[in-house]
Amino acid sequence: MDNHNQAQWLHQIQQLEFVTAELNLYLDTHPEDQQALAMYNKAHHELMQALRNYEQIYGPLLSFGFSPVMHSYWKWVDSPWPWEIQY
Image 1 (tube, rainbow, N blue to C red):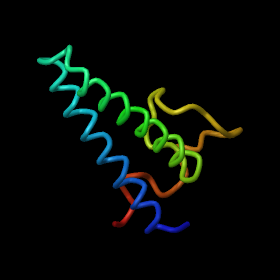
Image 2: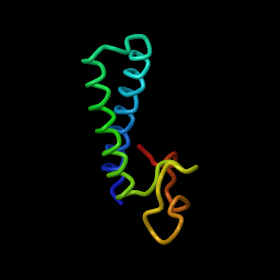
Image 3: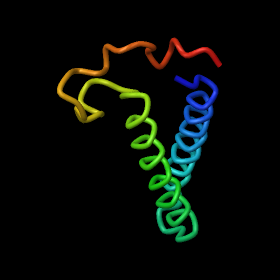
């Protein structure tokens, strides 16, 4: 497995998670801001796509019902775990 490429994917996911969380907080106080709503929807779409792409290549990032089983076995237990990846 290419750890450098995996780290790049994780970095992109972290950035998109940060953007969506910040926009979510902003929208809590500005719920009618159309530009922020569009930015949130775009970032959310990109985040979901990045998560799907990552999980297809490297396996699930989360357990507890957030990631569907894409194979005939429980891939969550495969190494390395997300927190074991060396950047």
